[in-house]
Image 1 (tube, rainbow, N blue to C red):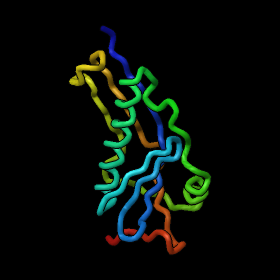
Image 2 (spheres, one colour; image 1 turned 180 degrees about the vertical axis):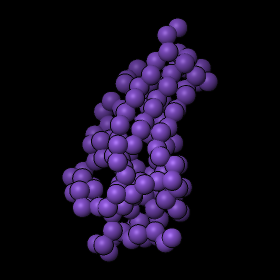
Image 3 (tube, one colour; image 1 turned 90 degrees about the vertical axis):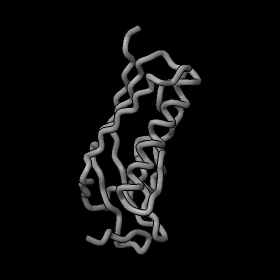
Length: 128
């Protein structure tokens, strides 16, 4: 069986909301949180691949029906400073072990840009 691969380029916004770090994707309204920027990024990666798995199990394209993030986040992204995660986002969600999907299936997301929102009272910069 031929390998199925889906590739996505995404922009993410890193926010600190009430002590929790949040990664919000702009192209697809998928967000996740953690106690640190790295934990939030890992949670977001799991959520992104999880969405792909759910869609594929329902015979849909991996990000079908996932809307863009609300304009509020796009506006924050436009004002935010560039942020480089130590681990450049490139996730590979191999779904080959799932018995309900035809193996191998790969979902790949690569960051086109990460930004840190801050200065509005809503978000704060991480401590170094």
